[in-house]
Length: 394
Image (cartoon, rainbow, N blue to C red; front, side, top):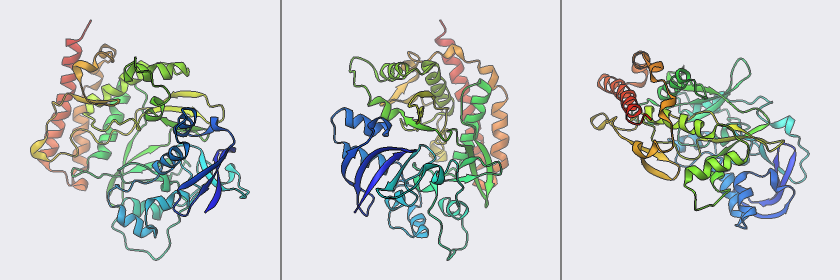
């Protein structure tokens, strides 16, 4: 057991007791709750159990136990569970500015954070993506932001030649299409002039991966829609209305348009994984100002990538929409303005997509029949959206 301080950059948030399993056992003192993670802030201000909230937040920022091939990752890192990794590098992340230090440790944010300071990543990335490399007796450095990469997909942070922090993501479905789906979503956004996180494709050690630069600065954090929705409990509003109202009350601009953009991309991509932790807002951690909506990101689980060839179907009209799992397009048009999108800008993208699939088909072992059906399926999505636009014109 040890007393630790939760920090937000150089600001003390609270003093707590942490045990050997990186579980908080008691909160002794709050220094400044305003600089706490929003999940904890909500619990504190709503008189809920702040200790439970603190543990949920802290463990939720780590590698999930259900990540593909997690056993091999833990074995190579010489740890028993993902929870052990959380405090190996002060709990640092590249998605926010929070960290943990001992009560008497004399550490400065500028000296340890991964936005400004280098970290070793090659060996960690190799084992994170399950490369078939020879086992090495060299201990892998755990001083890394890769300890706090949440989500199902195998991934890891690297530093590129221009000193950018870049997230590398592999695939986990039977099709291996997740990296190409990220690339395609980027191209849709580029053509329709939407705000997006740009994904590119690369081959690392014989595997196809997507790459995207970190879209945060060293003074920013992501706040998820899930935590935002817990700020307000007005039952007189729909989930959509409540979310829009909260963001607008914090000064965020163009909320409805940004949400519309995201759901149009999800429609075209037949995205089945738009849960409320892969969209939200970006907050300045110094001023606590809500700066902007996150760009569109994390669209890998799309276009039936996790469905076997005989069951591929691209005419599904159901969305994940906040807490609703089966929002139909007929219902969705009450919230998005289809007439704002010029789909002629997507002309030729289907062919470009096909060429990319062909280029990498050997690497991901893509069945030729699946390739053709997936390309046609994407074309069907474009046509379905065009038909919906015609149907719902004013």
